[in-house]
Image 1 (spheres, rainbow, N blue to C red):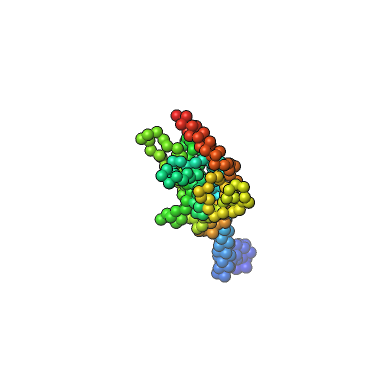
Image 2: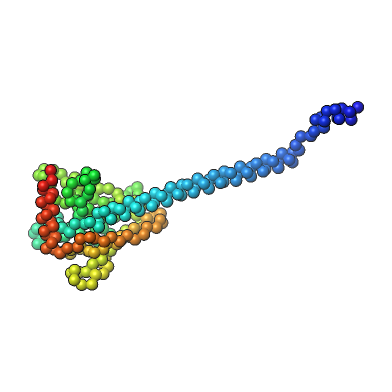
Length: 236
């Protein structure tokens, strides 16, 4: 009778999964889920690193373009407005130290600044970002009486571990040029400026070397200064 019932209803003889089979299936599922989430984490980390790399490259490009645009076109002018008339020493607008420099350059009209600007770049300390590379912009020529100088400061680079400058040129424009640690109280601009920046996060920044397009004599600098003063005075 039982045989007949089993033949008539074959589904009654089917057996379910054993406990071991269920455990094996759950183990395999867990391994697959772990591999899936591991792969997703690797992809997320790679994406984050890629974005961080793009950000680092963009920061280098911004800094390089800043120096390329303004330092390469620095104006060889006399800084009569910062010089002490009682000392009898006439300072040149370009002054370079191992950890900072100043020069004069024009900004494009789109920047909202008119006339020549004295650009001062110096490493400084910041409570939040550690050592930073600070840029101060000041109108090079005096403004209308009673009008402020409108000095503006911006941070060019954050988290700076090391900032170093070198200047390539001769001492009197006739001798053999060489790399110098500073460029002070000279009557002309250097031929080249080398900038080295290292960040505290270990990201590599290549050395940047810029060719100053104008390295004229002191006499020509005087004529250029007079022309620049006239040009600034003519602006509304």
